[in-house]
Image 1 (spheres, rainbow, N blue to C red):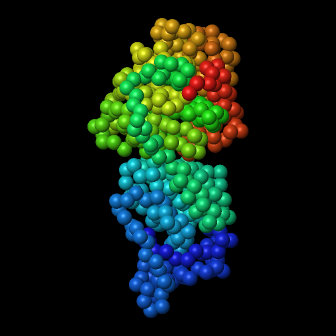
Image 2: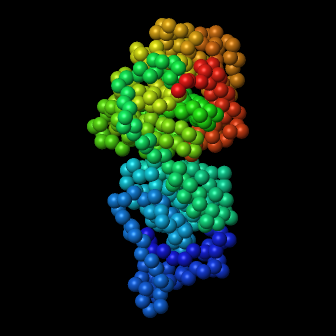
Length: 441
């Protein structure tokens, strides 16, 4: 249906009632939409509805800006018409969108109220195949008002088409675009980080994966950016294979060839840096590798950090202990947060890593613990600090919504600021800011 315009409903018409309300100047009927009497898609002969050809008929090459999904053909056309001049196409199923999109597309998928029962499963497949898409939905029997996995924003059932399109336009405008390159500035090393008055370097690590390290790094960086808007904050991912920061924010990752894994500062600025406008945060992602055994080296980590160090006051780095130990980042770091679960095995591993880090540090007060209470143990922090040899900076309480909001591509500190976990992240950011002091630009 892409490529045709029809008149829209009155402003008062809701998306749910669109098929019935014809009080406005909607000149198209369901019969005409089905192809009868020269309707939309016809040749407009014999008194059919006048149509206007879109300047960009369904182009299989140009990335879609908006994909409208609904089982009701008339509603799809009305939503597309209201979204003009965005490059939009319409689909009867979510699976059809998955088949239409290309790798790296950052299309905004609009789900109307008329979805098939198979849509949730198809949506999971869509997000897996195209992690860069954003999804806006109208609450329905398929999509609950409180939201569901894979949907970024849910509008009320009684929202109007104008409400839906307005939200869609906002999401399209807010899509994270790669930051513009700085042509007159290059970073050949991490000398900017060597000056503590220039950039604050905060490393977030853990003894093992899957303990919440990326969640802590993401929410800490977001809280710093939101709480101190005058401070430029960059969040850096260092794992090209198993890193989760890009998935948590719905970012597609750098669009480079698979064999371009050795990056330089220009590549970092032009292809690897993404702006999350909603929270004022820059995110640096390494090029993705499909080799499960691939790891970056210390030199490549220096490049990933060197470019944003030129124009950011704060760098928050999600980094594995393998990359951290033996590198010179420890000498340049202003703070190292060691993330650990509160169970005995997790604390044992944190204690081992803390001892290894301490052997490489000139300053013994550089490392602090961030405990993630995943089983509601509510451990006392005093004995934990004594056992691990590091003070406890924060304890993130158990809350399943932390993981849920990561699937919705919104850090919990931004999406649900009232929750206890969000308050902990904000306090950790404020503690970090006050302890290290504001960098001098």
